[in-house]
Length: 277
Image 1: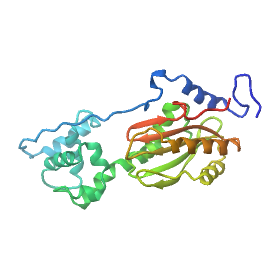
Image 2: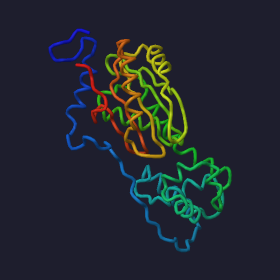
Image 3: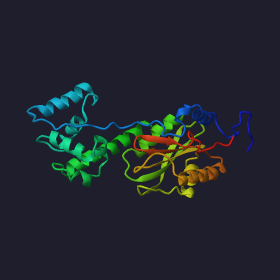
Image 4: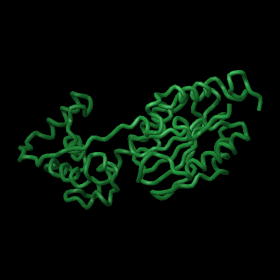
């Protein structure tokens, strides 16, 4: 493959160069660590005092409307308001506290399976389904907000997009994100879904997905719902194999992003992917 003076192959577009150069300019202090980690703070809850719930539902709803969001809400208040729509009458404050105490945090409540939620006193089928819809709805919103002609220009864009794909996922999944020469999103394909500990990146399916969408470059992504965002030796080996296969077809692997909760790890940033220069 012919080389330009700057060291990049002729087939690499300006947009792809900018992505690769954004990896090089990352703060060296981030090297070898999980990047852009949004750490969940541990919540501490006190046993709620007896509350007069006359008009309480109306006041909480009105507060949400007036503030246009939950910025001033404590976790149990946010959940309490949500529970109003699964239980038309009665006090949901105690149930909100019990759910958070049972699962450890509001995030873990939203991640729980409906069958797990129903084991908590006061949570029926409708309430359990309502709670379990929160993360999938958020994921759908994020996906829709990033549709055409979304451009993934740098590592931060890539990690944000990959986190949106894996948000709330209970199973490990492998995705191929296909881009044109301008790093605009052509489409995303889920290649496989597996157990909590492993998922297969079928080379034939990955190549087929990239060719079907006429991709100029791809970003690979999978999640570790039961662990950390760091890659295993097999993750690195598989990525290099896919990089070789796709490279032979003139398709560049820009990055492989691994997501675990709110953490995301870029293989390109951490030197696990080496670009041909």
